[in-house]
Image (cartoon, rainbow, N blue to C red; front, side, top):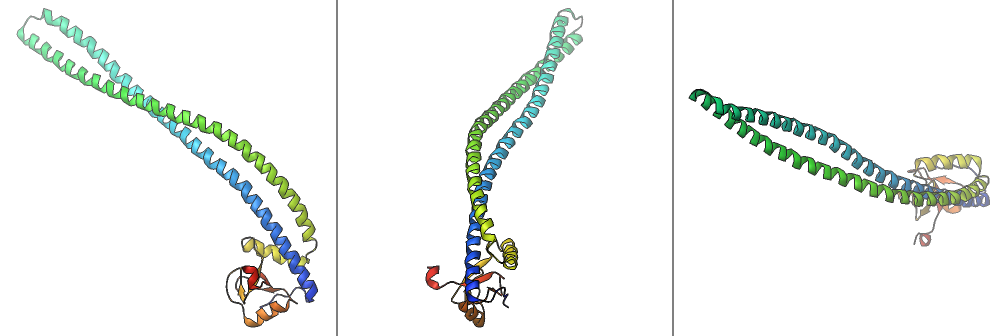
Length: 250
């Protein structure tokens, strides 16, 4: 139930004090790491959004090439049929029979109808291509503007990260000094708990309730925690415990 590392009350109180100060240092370091990571994560998310927009523009440009090719194909067909139409119209003046005349008239009419359809199709392709080109320009212009802003933001984030790293370096020195004051076995246990319990290895016990998991501890163990001559661990969350009066919670 209880993990006893030292037994004298004064030593225990000193050990608890060192552990709490160490944990406070570690939590400050953790907060700095989170601030640094948060800045970089935000930059990465914004860069991903820009990259996605760039990729969308590239995909759209590839589709635009297809549309323009299809338009050229229709334009070529239109020009070829226009030549045939003029040829048939010239032949119309030289036909010898009414049958040939009617046949040419039908071909001419069919060609005119088909070329009218082609003109409409060319217009449709033109409108689609213009809309796609405008969208590509919009995507690229937006990306260019956002990359400019992102470059400025990167400079600010890097400057802040440098400042936070400097603070962290100072705190790391204090941590090394504090670690040297903690019993090695206790420190090993502290590190294990810190890894497993979201950075919090030692917590207060108030009115018999562990403030780490908010579960009641046995009355006998709570009395032992009150005596303060041993280091105890919570039977539920395994964190190391110290007595924390209710007024401190408030």
